[in-house]
Image 1 (cartoon, rainbow, N blue to C red):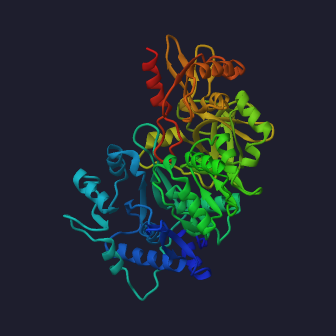
Image 2: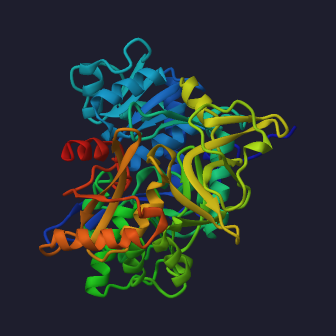
Image 3: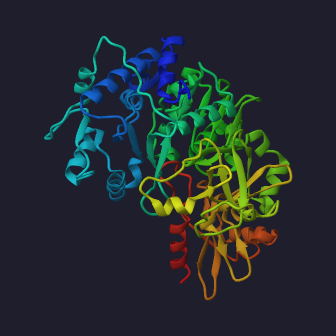
Length: 555
């Protein structure tokens, strides 16, 4: 069987180096001068192809081999992108871990990954040495930046060793070979390592390109660094934003707007928190961003209020797309702001229908099955629920990961073997249903459902009712321990402006709840100053922590 030419997505870089060699591939903010003007550094596609090949050869000279798992802890930079594609070219497996998960979980993730090598900035290598990360498996440590009291090569030494007059040949890999291990931020406990093979990377690339009509020559502003890794393979120029990527809710909107206007950005990825913050600014100041063809936002449901605000800056044809998916499967479905903001869509959400996440993208098969917290070994059509009934969302597709790294129990809980297709279904851990038009509606995480003595409540379905209040920023449904079952409690975070009358707002929220069948059982409302949220996107609410807080408040 003939090997597909681009089974290793690093091959795209070499092709683009020939078709658009002088186009910028990666643009990095460097410093501002006295007048406040930002100065940038960049790599063209030809330079990225050359640098990544040099690094691939240099890494091999340092003893790394195809299949070796390698921790990569380098900030978004020219070196980060060149290293990532260098690793892929050599068939070496980058292990990516959210640095904000905390030292305890970082050490656990590294131990679980059993890496052979560690590539990190000076600060990261210092922590690795002092805290013993990967002790027992790490054989090679490469320092990006000044090396202190430890040995091992620096990145500059790797580059020097990789210089050669001979062209580097990207290593041949199969679709099933591991390409990367990505540790999600995780809502509870130690994050799980999601295994990406080369076939999945290719499928994701094609599905993202085809779903959104992305074309070579476009300019992207990815405010979540991992998404930038698709840009060079899609032929897009990546503009790395001037921001702390772990704090999107605190971004300076002016810096985002500055980059969009300066580079005539056509595509932007932003978390719901960033879309909300920038949207408030553009609405208040009448900012227009006509170069944007599309904005993509994921990581948590995006409030309609946030979409409406940001949309004021877009041209009539441009939309904000909110794909539904997860690290294990992205994208699953997609919907644009034109449809989300339609009166009929919004009125259904306000009445407790949940959040519409659109139709499944091409090549994705989505099913709704009976809710269960137990492993399901084998697929059976009897698992399906009747049309319109809320159940657990399960998916099949070429972009769906097969397993977690060294987590057999987690894999068993998330995957269902399918004998007929010789494949599997992935359980998203989310609840939802299809409407009569084939649109998928998201009702909340399975772990966040609240079983009361009389009803089963779904978090997002209920929260959408209360989020329609103009003085509410966001809400979270939690269940606290009662005598025979859970007691539902609505925790509310208000908008920051003004001095809210909490007594009045509470009365109004209770009245809203009584108008909807799904929310009538909610009689307890608590106000919280600032919800605990995920590290990645600053938007995914940690309801488990809020439940413990609510339990203490109501003792």
